[in-house]
Length: 379
Image (cartoon, one colour):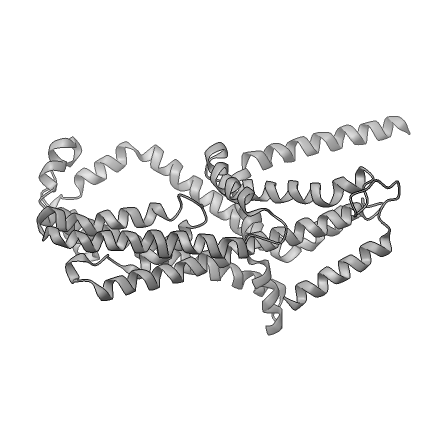
């Protein structure tokens, strides 16, 4: 009997090792999937009022995220190409680029970003340097695109099935619960992760609306020469960048300030730079500082410390790379919730801070759970 248990245990360890390796290999898309699951789960649950099946609700949630994001990225890419072409043509930068980049030596003009313009450029040979450059780096470009598509596929599939079958994972974990400690811990982690990550989604939406209003209001009050381009797009990107505290929004409004100031510096009225300074003041105070001080504490969760959460968002990408932006706050919530709920009970501490040899009774847990559930439904 013991030999059979040993064989089963070794087999289980082997399976766990393989699954752990695969999870580590794809830790970035899996982390983003968990982040999206908790960010959108309240939205998923709210669709029950429409009496929609779970699969339809999950597809609706993903479409609500994917379609606006694809449209936003496409719109931003098209505007970037059009504006870059106009800027290069206006200030005759093509000759400078051809001088410094050998592969652009045969380019006489930037083609129009239309189907007809690209076709005419292809016929005239203006696209030949770009095609040759892409051919020389085909391996890198193919690897980049295929990796992005694979990660996007994993994120979509995992998030979809977490929304549909996430409760099954919870029920499986609760099979190992003996004294309600695991149950209470899982309930607390689940609730806090939803509160924190859904709060981030609300924060992105709120910052986007504030930035759009601030940038549009600025353009309405200043001369046309000092306006910032595409305030709605810039405001939306600012909201998305707010996921990273301290430095996040600056990667949008600082380049936007430079883009608005560059035409004035290259040939406009230098006195207009006063308005650009005013725009920078609006971006720093109204868009960046005030919402971060007011909204983030309100949307940071029920028990997670705001300062620790900001450190997690800031240091996560530094230590772990891109996915650390999503992984670090999840680990922080899991760790703090364990220290708050499970650890005191495992060490025999009572709720008043003293020591007790008695574990939490199941009736106490049921009362606490019912209170938490009613409070959550009320909110």
